[in-house]
Length: 181
Image (cartoon, rainbow, N blue to C red):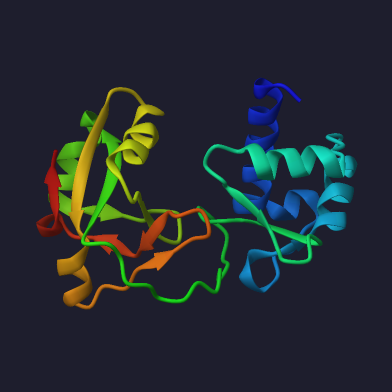
């Protein structure tokens, strides 16, 4: 499968594993997991048949590691970014002292006033390094990188989670914990 096909399939899977599982006849189980067989059957019913090998390629080759198989390889889930109700069953984790967030200049006035908000998602997504935050910010234009004082947030009682692909999650980041780089 070429890069364009991988990207298209990744977006299709993101839509259905994070936002619209019901469109494929899926119900997310505890942890956000769905049976691989049910997913493949749902894709075929929807007119987008996917082979097990193609699915494995998307999981293995996605640059952001958006998806994961369970230890048995019989279930799959999106690592984070859900807008549907799901408990990913991630344990609270001690974050690094600094985390990062990539955005664009147009979002900065609201961020300065409200901080980072989860909006329709379950958590705010934070990157462990500037390079990752830059890649995230580039999706919408010239990236602007924010540093988050995660150590101070954690000491103030904010809870952090680390998803399986290294993305850090929290409910919000108030403005006083942000600085522009």
